[in-house]
Length: 473
Image 1 (cartoon, rainbow, N blue to C red):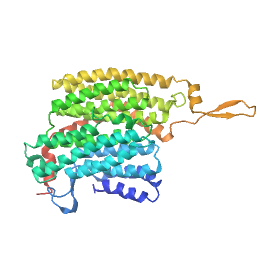
Image 2: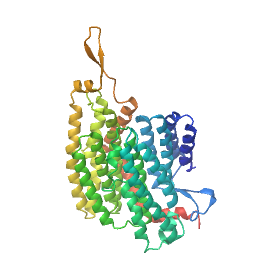
Image 3: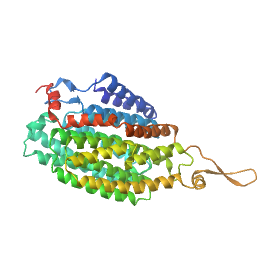
Image 4: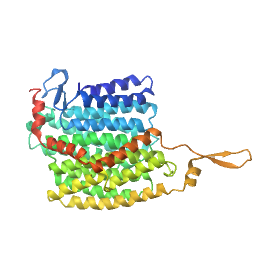
């Protein structure tokens, strides 16, 4: 049954090839199908052996208490993106393949297939990055992504050489302990690239700020969440993170430089791109501490950051140089998301930062809290600035820039009023997500209970191995 989460999106992707426009119509139904299956027909603690090969030697898909909530979150994001983004015909097909790949990378239980799905994601990401003639951004991503993919393949091959298996659970205790740190360094380089930790994340601003309504959402939200899962699986559940203190320091440096980069930007898309780098670097820094409360808080932080940036990127793609006076619904959603990113009370972001700071102090970690607080001050500065600029932008200026000049019967030029510049679907989705941030702000346990469950399971290797062991040697 769990194989359908990969097979159905691929089947519809192939079905849409003869008629490209079908892809964008198939996408919401496929995402909804996946969610229905996850909620009503699937439960954690399931394992599927492809071709009846034993788990130690064959391909295995694993649905456990860690992968299950990540799958729900990722497919929900895909559904929302399909309803809010403007997808050109051929991009619907690509998003269907991406859906299969992100589900696959979360479900797979072996290193080689995680590499295969990672490469599928990368190829789609390169194409999506080039949207709106953004060839330079796509080329930068291709260079960095190529290095990351090569490092991951070397790591997977090294696991097979040293353990004789590619299965994650078995490899964790069969692999030569002396080789594990070196192997993990190869994997780590890949994640530093794909999770945009500076300096290996320098490709992100040029890609995310290309003006597309789906590029930053697809790569910065959907793909990022799936890669945080894989990072957690490998470094918190399977192997130990190499030099966690060094990773934490690198991530903290990335946070500060990304926030300073966002502060100096004159373009909203680029500012949000640097803000995204800062957000995911915070998650990486927290995960590197490998303590249950901190890991739980990191996942809460990820939830808030992904939802908030989904709103901000979606609306910024439609704004251009226009303000919110002609579309107050979009303005309210944008402001709510901004306040949640900063951590203003009554929003999910407040609890994300509260839980993270509290957990860090409990484990006597003080450097990361200091960096987070500095980042909050910088975030507040540029996000408030952008909100003021967009809310108080001169309406006449917006109309002159984006309206249509017409000539009346008396030969006097007039301005034809423009329609709402944010599509109805994007308005509804972003407003619902913004209200969700408010609801979580009043009822944080809705998310916190789930993140605690994920953290407890991801830091305990035994349940995962026992589930894999059902496949036998």
